[in-house]
Structure formats: structure tokens, C-alpha cells
Image (cartoon, rainbow, N blue to C red):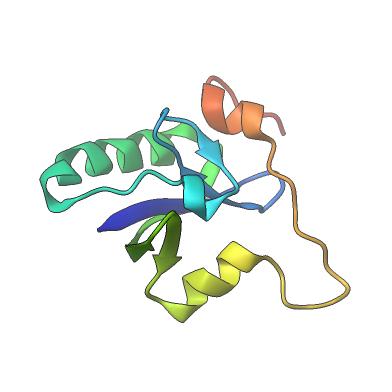
Length: 106
């Protein structure tokens, strides 16, 4: 099983592809793709990369434990929890840009 993760360009926030086609901060709300959904996942990656709003779009292998989505790679588990440096706060994504994909504000 896999999910899609990216960083929102303006804020740098970690975001996850959701079942409704948008992007959000909660890994537990991420759409989980099975092997049969790989073509849909690849299309979502292409749309995200073409948006100009999201960077570092990647698929991550996960497992589902009850209602929790748990990344198998340590790096992604750390990203899901937020920054580890105490002086840095979790960045809030500019979600309306991540959902609309209509333009990029510079």
C-alpha cells in the first residue's frame, strides 16, 4: 500500500494526497493506494508535479494499523510528526493553492 506525499512550495509544509483529490496535513487522512490503483496514483503524481504548487511529490509505502496510516520509512514517520528542531514550528500549508492548482503566487 502506498500514499502520496509532497511539500507545499510556499510554506514548505508536508502534505498528503487525500481521497477527495485535495491535499492535507494529516497522514491518517491520506488516500491509501493498493496495487490495482497504481495508474490512478501515477496520474495524481503527474497533476501534482504540473501544478507548480507542490514539490518533492513522492509515493511512500505504508501499512494501516486500525485507523492509523503508518509509513514504513523512518524519514516519512518523522515528517508526519513535524519538525524535530525545537525552535521550528510545523508550517501550515496554503491549502487553497494545493487544491486549486490554477496559479502560483510568487
